[in-house]
Image (tube, rainbow, N blue to C red; front, side, top):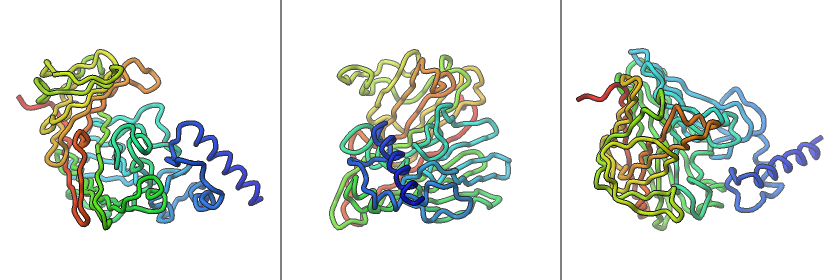
Length: 330
């Protein structure tokens, strides 16, 4: 029976590897490597320390719920350290209808991480942080005032095989009375310097993307239009961005305060306050893709990618962003 299980596991890995490389392996993993993943193939109802730092496979996702004094809620998944929901009282984030919520792929929705790479490059798309299980370091989710949870991800054999650098990532999510705070710190624990990119690939819910708009310091900024072949850099002439077609635009140097405005229900708008670390903004919409549920979301991403961060041994980089729900103040 163990041989049969191993053959089944090999077939499972082969299918996933051929499909889209979602596991991040650059070569088909060995049988010994597969054996180390077998514990994550079954659903686990208790603590999952044995899964920390590993790619999760077909498991029931653990989640942490937080409630503040106003009754606002947040849901966080240690798999990918993804904030999957924030209700204040309406839902601020969006989970795509085609999202896999069993650990077989990164969660397509909420606030996924991109680290140590943003977009395509030498390793898998958007890096590996979004499809590894993070360790819950501090759980204050049951606190009545300002509940929070802090998760950590450190290098291991799997990450070193893809990106040979030692690191520690610490991510705190706090539920304040009127906002959700997300703070990410990356530390170089290696004996050599290395560089990285990072982003929060935030999916924001909207009543109708055709009536949504993004407001910020866009006018006059240079942006990379990735929908062009090859991608072209253009100067933005608009101060308000609307989604009228498929969009993938990287605005270098645009951060600070960005508003995602809901034209149908202004009270369900959200202000993204990039407080530190995040220096670029990416706007993404799979406009026209019914399977992704394009009509009810757009991504307004907090990014540090145009100029990668270089850290010397022992150095850290920190970022902070707050999501403030409600109609923007005039």
